[in-house]
Structure formats: C-alpha cells, structure tokens
Length: 417
Figure 1 (cartoon, rainbow, N blue to C red):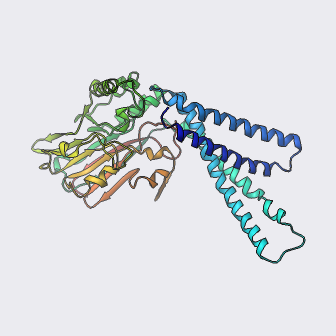
Figure 2: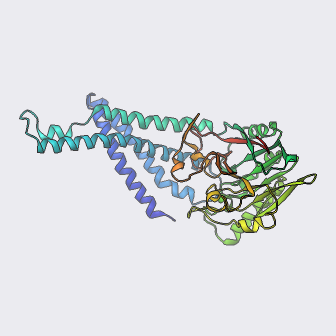
Figure 3: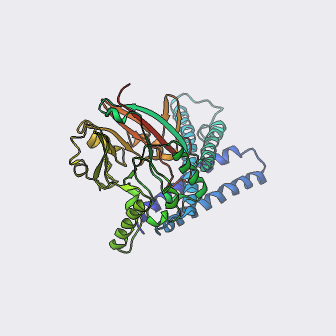
C-alpha cells in the first residue's frame, strides 16, 4: 500500500489529538454527576473510535480506481473531525501556555502560602475549554452544512477591456467552466440545472479549463449526454487538467492507463468539444482574428505534472495580436506566461476550487489555498495581461463547499473602456 508510513503517522497524530481534546471534555464535564460524565466520555470515545476506524479503512477505498461517493463521504467525515479537533486544540494550547507561564511565575515569584503548585499547574480554564469545543463543533457543522452547497451553482459576470482586442470582437461573450470532476457527481438532475444555467447566458464561446473527471473516463458515461448540450456559435474548446491523466490511482499496466486517457479524449469529441492538446486555433470574423491556445496540464508546483508544452502550442500564434490561453493550473501564468508573451492577453485557469472552503465578502476573500497559490480565485491583472481563476463546477475530496460556491463564469470582452 502506497504512503503507508505517512498514513500510520497521521493515525498516531490523530490519537494524540483525540487524547488532547479529551482533556477539555473532562474539564467541562467535571461538574456533572458521575453518570453524566461517563455518558459524555463514552459518546466522545465512541465517535473517536469510529473516526480511527475510518482512517484505517480509507487507504483501501482509495487504492481502488473508480467513482466512489461513499469514499468521499468517509474522507469528509475524517477530515472534518480532524480539522475540528485541530481548531479546538488551538484554544487548549493557549490555555496550556497560560498555565505554564503561571507555573513559571509561581516558581520565580514569592510564594503565596495559600496556593500550591498543583493548584496553579493543573487548573484548566473552563472558558477556553468551552470556547475550543464550540469552535471545533462550529467548523464541523459548517463542513456538514456545506455538503448542501455542492450543486449551488453561482454565475459570476465580469467585463474586461483589452486595447489589443479587434473591434469586430467587441462584446464577445465567453462562458468558462472548469473542474467538472464527474466522478464526484451523484445527482444528474442538479448537474443538468447547472448546464441549463450556462445556456441561459447565450455565450458566443464556451471554454473548459480541465479536470473533466477525477481519474477514469468511465466517470462520464452517465454525464456526457448532459454536457453535450453545451453549444456556442464559435464552438466549445477544452483542455486537460492534472486529474484527467489518472495519476492518482494504481493501474495494472501502463497500457490500461493510456487506454483510459484515449477514451477520455474520445469523450471530449463525443460531446462536440474540441480538445486542444498543446495547440491553438484561430477564430476569425471578417478580416479580424483572435487565438485560442490550449495546453495540457502545466504546473509550477513540483507535486503536479508538466504535460503541457506552451512553445509548441504557441508556435504560429505570435502574429495574432490577441490570444486567450487555457491553462488548468494558475501557477503557469506567473511562471511562464506573464510578461514573456504579451500577446496572451487573457489566461483562464481553474484547479484550486478555492479549496471549496473559505469566505468571500466585498473587498475581502480568504481560503487556506491562498497560502499555496498566489492566484487562486477570481480576476488578477498585471500591466495589460489578465488571469481569471474559476472556482470549479464540481468538487472532489470533500463533497461540498463552504463559502466558495461552484462557479459558472461569464466574461464579456471589449476593446475600449
């Protein structure tokens, strides 16, 4: 089993965390009758035992290729409990630091004869214990509620101005979709509602920026007829993302893996999408043209593969004054595109999902993924170039969204302000 040492280390950390949280449970239940304390302790350790069992079973679920919704739910439960306890422990750690400082002060300062070192060292704060437990429970509740948001599609509209855009393309309306992750879907009717929302925008052009599936081409068997409904006058163009290569499951042979990828490419064609594999197309209106460049997955992060070849895709496109690049991973923009290729006016990416967790309010957005990616959701500009990072149509791992909703992006292009 791959990553077995890591998994057992994680299990050990989880056990230590469970014990640490239990100390707070003991503190807040200290005033209850013995029977009440025993009930609360039994409930806590029952939930803990179940989470440990799930941790042990998860590697076996993930070692098998295939779309398993139960796998996602189990992962969400384990992750939710882990992060809830981790957040709670920050409060307990604060309390323990306070207790240590009190103990040090007791050793150094003149002694109060009425206070013993035992009283000082072992007196936990009931307030901080409750605060930590409430914070942890709040996080777990938010993650549980977020499961209801997994099909709550949000249409985001923006207008962008580029002086290099040919005037005949003024008002060009693009819909961007990204990160469908069909293997996570369980509700075709909800997915179809999202597709209808796309078509209601009446786009001139539809662009998909990768991760059609979690791993297997067969994940699209029940969904390709739905996505084949996506039509636009100037066409539907797509690229591959890191998950489309099925690098995250074990294969009996390299030939099977290659066959899966070939089947996936055929699915794009079956839906009427033009898959751009390190290549570009030219869209013409009368004598004016723009370029659509699409590359395979390319990431500046070492843990993600570089299948893309931008130079190959860009060959012959340099003379086009305005181009749109489809590149799944937004780190590609800063690493290779920005400033080096000024005719690539707009780059469209996805990949991050906004980590499916965070908050966005006017003037402020936050997600843990921002500590990994400089550009992770929405619009970014530098000089005359722009990047838009779509928050994803689907979901993976955690089967829900908290604060970062699934997205349908509508972009209108103009040549003047």
